[in-house]
Amino acid sequence: MSLLNRIYLFMGIPSAFLRRFWLLSLFAVCLLTGCSGQKTPNFLQMVSEKMEGQKVKIPEIPAEAAQARQGPISVSLTPQQEQQIGLTLESAELQPFQVTLQTTGRVQAAGDSLAHISPPVPGNVTTVFVKLGQRVKKGQTLALVKSDAIGQIESDLLQASLQNQSDLKQAQVELNFSKAAYQRELKLYRDRISAKADLEAARAQYEKDVANLQAVQTKLQSAITVAAERLSLAGATTGVAEQVVRTGHISPNFIVAAPRDGEIISRTINLGELADPSRELFTLADLSRVGFVADAYEQDITKIHLGQTVQVTLDSMPNKVFSGRINYVSDTLDPQTRTLTIKADVPNPDLTLKPDMFARLKVFVDNTSILTVPRSAIVRNGDNNYVYVETGEHRYEERLVKVGDDNPQSTQILNGLKLGDKIVTKGTLALQGTALKAKDGG
Image (tube, rainbow, N blue to C red; front, side):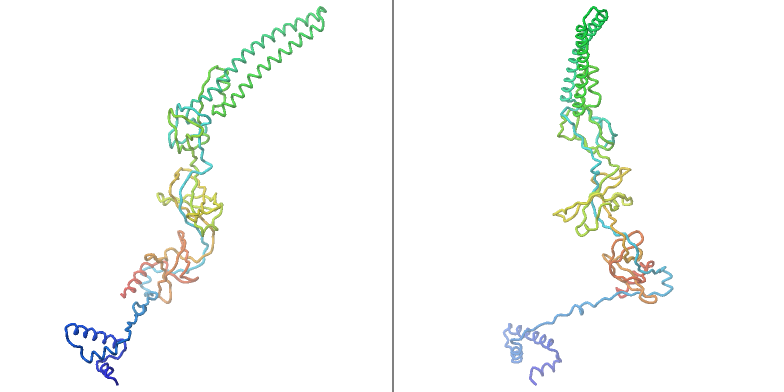
């Protein structure tokens, strides 16, 4: 046996790892001694030669040894304890469950309930009758605008009317004269004084003058009809043309009226400003029915269809739910967000929902049978969810589960339980306290 091995045995150092550790410590002492000017003993010289060329490797301690594994926590209770905490068991079972998708979005006025109001012709605003946010009825006057275009149409009509009245008087005079001549010729012909040719000439003139009078009258009516059409296109109310002819006065104003019931959600015009067809004066919205715009994630787009029922909730009114249906699903994804735009039509009879409100949307996708447990069975600890499963007589195991959607009564179990497992639905908090003590070694 070598001297070095005898030293190991004498020192009681049997393992290779501890031998190397001992040699390294001894070598460090030698270095310190050398630094003080002392010579290295032959023994240390021999140890150094033995260590030369060898690599010292400190083995890693396995994670299993560093931290003991923790299995499921089991809790045992006596029958008296179970009765005291009111412990109740139920079975995990398959139940019809309404599958839903959750997303967020905003409220907006329904597209077909909006009315963008602009003047048909330029003009100056002389009066504004409504304020922003005011509710109005169909046909209600919103503003009064003075228009040169309307004034010109009415002026042309008045001029045509005055000319027609002059033509009408002249035609009436000529008709009266030809009528008298025809009646005279007729009497002379009957008395055998006048020739038949003279009678026919008088009758022809008379009929010509009758037709001329009718033509003058028709011309005036045509002028009124044309002017009324032009005035209507320019925004004037019905009957303005007849009023101009009847009174002989022009009124170059037109009324901006509400085309439907609704609320003024935009007003961009004030007294004295120039109104132009390219400028929107008012935006009117019927908010008794609103739209909800949201984005669906790409993985959910196959589950969303037109006509599906939705529920809308707002953070400002968490206890109030608004129901509606999907009426639009986009055909394309947003390339930036990879989401699909959907819209839902939601009745809003009390006008609670306002445009641009932030809201949450729940889409009812389908009814399916899925493993569920009562909501009272779920115990939450941080980000984890647990249930307590009966594993033996008066013995219960804490089980980590993955949950899905829930409703007022039940919660979906996606992983961690199997059909028929007996779970605790009442007394879970007491069990949780006992389990925490068990984890802490209490």
